[in-house]
Image 1 (spheres, rainbow over the protein chains, first blue to last red):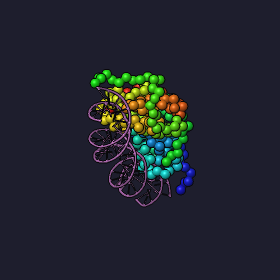
Image 2 (cartoon, rainbow over the protein chains, first blue to last red):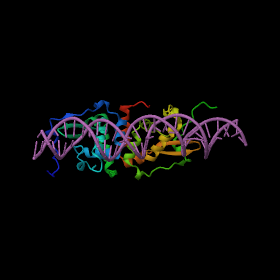
Image 3 (tube, rainbow over the protein chains, first blue to last red):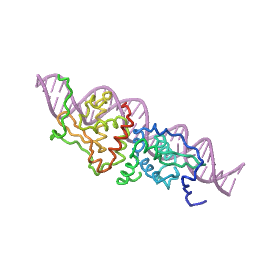
Image 4 (cartoon, rainbow over the protein chains, first blue to last red):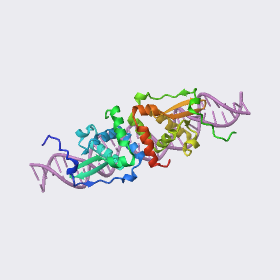
Length: 126
Length: 126
DNA sequence: AGGTAAGTTTGATGTGCGTCAAACAATATG
DNA sequence: CATATTGTTTGACGCACATCAAACTTACCT
């Protein structure tokens, strides 16, 4: 077994992969976004994904190793359905990224403000 | 009976009234704020209070006349305990206002960004 | 004092949510 | 092909939440 973590492929190297269903940019609702981020785990994931694309349930990378993989998958779905993240399926893996452009277009400054607010707040993930 | 609505007193005229318990500015947690605003009714109230101080359960003014007064009181408490609003008890009435300065100090730009985001979104209150 | 009005509190109810566990599907690897 | 790996789905469980209704508190009014 290879004990090195799987490589994070740069975004521009992933041309394949199927995009999982998600709301159109125009259909992203503020209250759903806030509801999705009003959970400690998801707010943490939001911060993690702000750094770039990642594996979704590769627990160690996400810092949610204490949670069951099905629980993480559940949070992924909520954020995706809220329009916060985009997920592409490549092989067995899921590549998740923030829909930064769509969010910025719909709610200017929100992502930036939240990330900055999170910095000074720094809650520990439960 | 006086069928005119009770006057909204300007903020600087209310020197009396007891401040209901609320978290210190430094103890306001981002995730609690987001959770509090991740509800359609409370997000609406957030917008209403941004205009200035108001009665709390005076349903017609708040645009939540369809809700029971105890339900409104419940939402008030959640927002107050999240640090979003400050409530002062004057006589039988409650004057509620946004803790704008405290929120701005802790999460710069958040209130402004949310209000702007809400404008373009404009969900109808359930 | 008696009655009315404003809010809170408590209880009850239905619903949704976060979590885990087990089963399942799909893909990679020997 | 056989087996392991990645993630989703389904079911179950407990807890939190949004809501209403009724009781209660406090204050205003005549």
